[in-house]
Amino acid sequence: MPNSARAPTPASATCVRYLRTKYEFLHYDQALAAGWPIATGIIEGAARQIVADRLEISGARWGLAGAEAVLKLRTVSANGDLEAYWEYHLAGTVSNAKLPVIPALREWHGGSGSYSYQPGTRIVRSRAHAAALAITAATFADDLAALTGRRPVQAVGAAGEVRKGDIFLTLGAPDRTLGREGYALGSTDRLTVSARTDTGAFYGTRTVLQLLKQKRTVPRGTARDWPTKPERGLMVDVGRKYFTPRWLAAHIKELAYLKLNYLHLHLHLHLHLSDNQGFRIESASHPEVVSSQHLTKRQVLDLIALAARYKITVVPEIEAPGHLTAVLAKHPHLRLTDRTGKVREGAIDLSKPGAYQLIKELYTEYLKLFPGPYFHIGADEYGADGNGYPQLLAHARKQHGPKAGVRDAYLGFVNWANRLVRAHGKTTRAWSDGIHGGNTVTVDRNVILEYWYTHGLTPQQHVDNGHRIINASWHPTYYILGGNTPDTAFGYEKWHADLFEAGGTLKPHDRARNLGAKLHVWCDLPHLQTQQQVAAGIMQPLRMLSQQTWGSVRPAHAWAQFQPIIDTIGRNPAWPKQI
Image 1 (cartoon, rainbow, N blue to C red):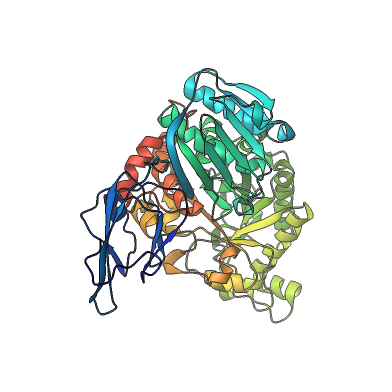
Image 2: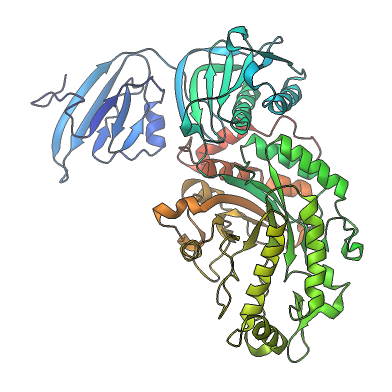
């Protein structure tokens, strides 16, 4: 009984209310470690396991469950005076703890007991959706074979035909909250993954794969899960360092394992295919520019096919009009020079018609090769401004009017490239730093901008100009060979997909214009790390990014407390011993 003058009930307490839901388990010390904001409510330290319906204190919901326990709670007024103190002696059925996966589940309601994966376990696709789920089921079977050494039998049937130990995949979930990437998971004596789309069902299989990697049993209960952001990915600078097809293929599976995928083919494994140190993809139109170490088109097509199975879109970036040293080495007449004749390293002269012809031929070749919805033109760090380039000024005024400046020549190129990309049915992506400052030219609003640093406009200004953006902030998403690496503690504890470089943010109603975030592997000094070292170096940052872009409540308050979960989940089951 309360030891205050009046015994408040949950309904009348000023900072507590109960919602009738299934129990969810949380140790008292876990609640404290998680740093829940309790504000006007303080739980006394006497209770170790707490049983309650879903408890809400000052807007923070706690799912609490356990055996018999005492909940001691006191509330304080604004000036700190004691308002009430009471105890609830509660009893309930112990429920299963929230399942440890990366990213954490958005919702979990534990039952009692567990599901067991068995030698006779089948993957059963619902009869009504058998065709739509065929690739997801086959991919899941491959991954389970890599995990257990045995490929489960696949079957088609109705829910009533599913046996004990089976895994049932179905579509048509009526829950609109799940969206295109969400799923529901039911664990009884069988597992059921239901979703509104095949992509959502695939993500459900990733959760099951992580759970079965830990143990061949899954606690009973129900889960609902969906992401906050539609784009969650990885950029690999293949231009400055060659990464083998084996390395890239392993990371396609690794991204999928962490639900780093896409919505509407938006998530990408971003292949930065050309840069100052190399041009790393086979070319029929300009074979002279291709580096000796490069990806063949056959290898690229194989990677695209693998990525499609794992719900990942591969987006190529062919950098222009800067970072073209490797290309211009074979076309020196197209190099940009200033009024003194000094060459601007890596920049192509946009006043020369041959520059557009060369870039058009390269872009057209790869626009046809890559089937995804995006094509990245680069467009960063061109750096030709001011009066030092009279030929660019003359070109800009010829094309864009007498008031045009040198910057308009560059912005005009971005729009020219955008028209080329859109003529092939795709959407243009570009880095954000140069997209500003024209006298007569503004960049087309349908170009998606990747905001990486504070050069130029703010994220909000780009959105106000009509662009969609993605968070490519230097901190904490840049992994640079020869430079900084991600501060994963900051990334996990403080950063989120709507927090941009130097604290930039968007207005709440504009946050949907930010598609998400990705990790960036930049190979400024490519010799400093082997590709094996890069794989090891980005292992934990990818898991930080997975959690923060999915957007569910973090499974642990501090990065150090997240480490055991990372260790438990490990690599995807198909991760090669030698990469």
